[in-house]
Image (cartoon, rainbow, N blue to C red; front, side, top):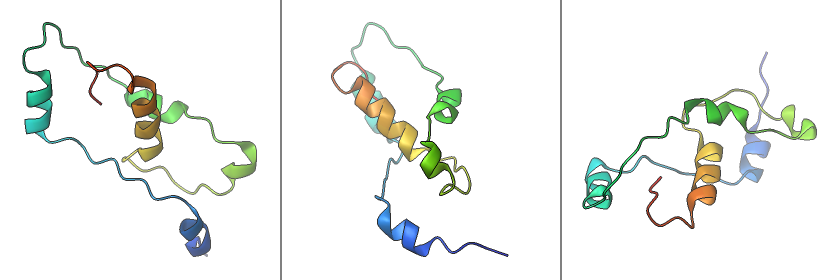
Length: 83
């Protein structure tokens, strides 16, 4: 048995959040006085899904586009933070 999500997938916005290249990370961190790493691994699993939309979800992927979109939005106005 399977569920065909073709129409649902067509209706959903496409998100793409590739990892930044190592060169970009080094260039943006150069000449900073402080650097830190935020381990946000478990944050990805804390984004709520409306009850009415939960039946439309089928599996979790490691890409986490929804989570990355949220992180980008939260830190957007802080110039020194690179996501």
